[in-house]
Amino acid sequence: MYNEKVMEAFKNPKNVGEIENYDGLGKVGNASCGDIMQITLKIENDVIVDAKFKTFGCAAAIATSSTATQMVIGMTIDEALKLTNKKVVEELEGLPPQKIHCSVLAEEAIKAAIEDYQNRKAGKVTPDKIDMV
Ligand code: FES
Image (cartoon, rainbow, N blue to C red; front, side, top):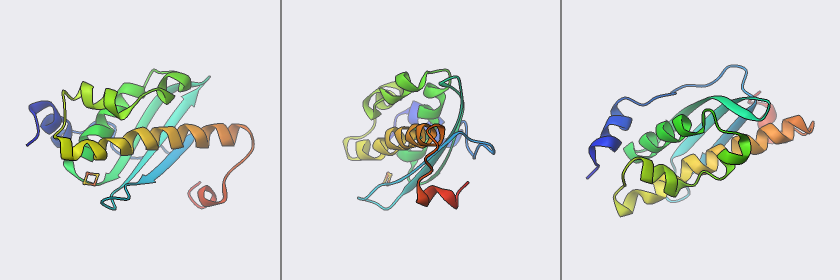
């Protein structure tokens, strides 16, 4: 069902874990299946210097989160905000149509982590994030 590139990213995912002193944390859930993804980012001068993920989800969710973290490292936050699930799927040379929704988690988690970073920079920490700090 999955191509070789997806299987490789699933079997040997990169950037698994959580950055200890992260600058932004994004946690999102997939309403259709209940799977959860968390992405932490280390950001210096608005450039993403590190990204790690934890995903409780299917092979497509793990492969796309691994690939998405690899893609955003080195990007400015503006560039990372433009990263769509479509671009991540292209990087993986495709996903089965019924698995495209799984790739949306990585895009949303990165956007949520950048939003969290911007909120922290502005001195705003949203209440649901306080217990995660
Ligand atoms: Fe839930 Fe893939 S089935 S993210």
